[in-house]
Length: 286
Ligand SMILES: [Zn+2]
Image (cartoon, rainbow, N blue to C red; front, side, top):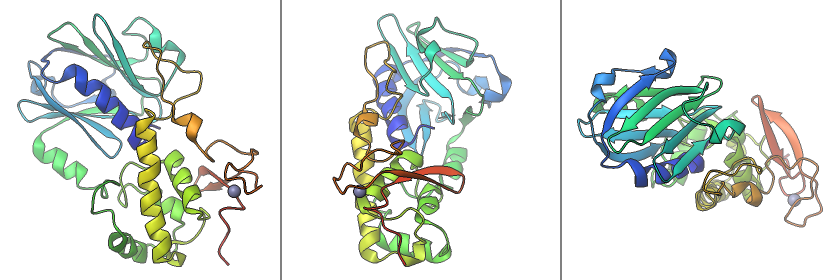
């Protein structure tokens, strides 16, 4: 599932393309994938593109918004005469003529360009919301990791409410902090030298501080490299996300720890999620 850096990458790519363009047509191929009224969107100009948590928001001039959650297999592909800008789940039909059989919603802009929301497994969604609905929906999320609200005091307070939770599950909870999923969670805990099953009640202030710093560090790096994609994926411009080449533990089971500690990366399951760590660098607290 795309996490904060992947959605941020799509946001940056799309912003350059669709701001000030007017949406002139919408075709919905799968009813469940599009919730809301087309009439709130049609003939509206795009004012801005934002991201909150893992959700992409396209703001329209009538103050309605189009919200996208890509979930497991969603893709957003923008095509105009010269360029294809793609983001989300990589797959082999990425370069196909569009729409294809996985296209759920198609938007057309006044310059003739198309924005295709493809989703193989149909868990993703596109919703039309007014300002009030957006605020209500976004209010359910915890702070953004780069905001000042994501601080030591906040985390200590939150941890008191869920003392028995593991730090891995705690950081996965979108009401605690927004935008972190499996990849960046494991990477941040590795840099912090914290065993992922550690109960939040056992973490010291110093360790929380390290978590804050390293969450921001791995997310910044993820954005810098354009997110994480399958290593064989290259988009139409010959670019792909590069973060997979800079990961320390995620999907590295059996490989040597890159810190040089001599440890071998292991995989365990926490809350149903595969979790990667170095047993040498991230020792269990007794
Ligand atoms: Zn190690």
